[in-house]
Image (cartoon, rainbow, N blue to C red; front, side, top):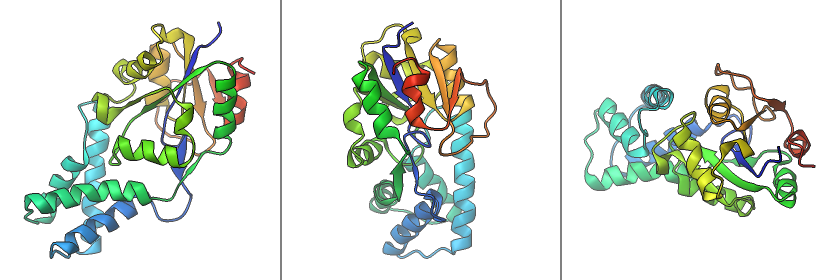
Amino acid sequence: MVLEAVTFDFWDTLVAMDGSSVTMRDRQIDGFAEALLRHGHTPERDELVEVFAENWTRFEARWEANAGQYTPADATDFIAERLGVPITPAMRADLIDAFRIVGERADLEPAPGIEGCLSALHGAGVKLAIVCDVGLTPSPTLRDRLTGFGLLRWFDGWSFSDETGWFKPAAEAFLPALEALGIADPTVAAHVGDNRRTDVAGALALGMTSVRYTGLREATAAGPEADHVVDDHRKIPAVLGLA
């Protein structure tokens, strides 16, 4: 079978943090603290660290259960309540926006070899799309970051969970991206991602060819193994029979 489309996960597949010791959560804590300070509140750093850890546990529970999105607004309300900080509408908007600002400024970098991979797939006549489970950085910011890396231009469609309302492995997370490409039959498409539970399981359930990418990290989530496992994006066109 000749593949007509390939979809890609975002985090730890297309893009990742640059490997510095400062994590995305560290940056979110700093951004939240700065926003609180602008409104006259100065919680202890240790308290913020603890509450942000609780907040991420809540996100992961929602993510794993596919029980609807957990947005920056949800996170803001939970964190403020746990801190015992009363917030005005203007302050709430400022705290929510802190997550976007962190996403814009975080030290991200594209995966090695991804530009060459996308170019080769495009040159083979394959349509490309993104299927992304969004955390606390909103999808417009993620697309802007891809534009800054010169990568968004390769994609003809996408499906971000904060816009669809669905996380992988649900079919509803993948199908909007395929529909944007004009692909009615998922079996003529492949999906590339790092996570067995979400990327691999979701793709296989739809009959898509699954590629697990390990070049940025070895994800620990349990789930089925992919049809192909690669550690370098430059291998993907050949692995899929497109080079």
